[in-house]
Length: 306
Image (cartoon, rainbow, N blue to C red; front, top):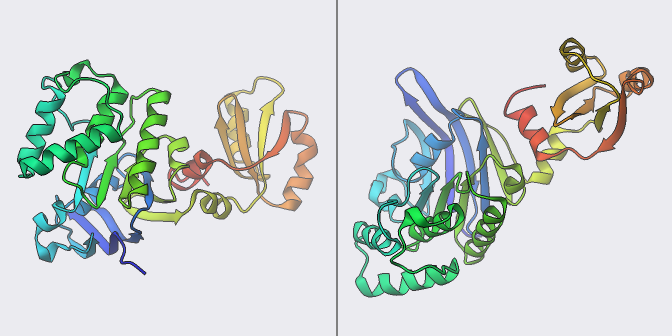
């Protein structure tokens, strides 16, 4: 078996007395599309900074593409590409100027750079001229060029930090086709996202909460393990007051009760409680069994609502 593309054991990052990342352990296989989810402040970005060679850990074991911090930060940086939702390209420069600048920072050979740029622009089906200013590109096209920039030095692993935030649904779909193409070339893709439909496309997902890795599995595996109870959709037959909703959220019939648009998703607390209360609940709601969604998993595990 090939070595993991990313491996951590008991990774810790502290800022003074504050522990941002608290003894997390996981590995990511070569060519895997790995989702990394959590609320703001959960420790995702700090972990990614460590894995990109930007932040030395306080304790623990780290290997990225076979390199560790004992090899020096540059050894890790040479193996990874990084794309942020906030800053990857300069808006007032052209596409060519942005890529030229990044190639210069990476000290790429001019001949290699020319070939690589051509390959990547073909990969993203870039239709604009290289003299197009980034500020004039659509959000989706800008993110595709940003991905090309992150791949310019041919890294083994690419970290994508909320790469489709603010992009149209069609643009997000095109971007994820690119992610699958990149993974199909053998590269490991490590992605954070707040879109649950995107997370569904990951092979596995790690869920962070308060600096800890609280769950790790495939989307289907997470749904099965987080919701062993039957799950139902509740459609109110009338308007419900806030006090009534609070009462249902704490009701003994439910192990989980959360709003889902105009309806509610709920997990039964147990067969006896459900059998006892179902006739009364059916006077207030239309009830139908459903499969739990990844959003349900996120709310229950990451946001900590039991």
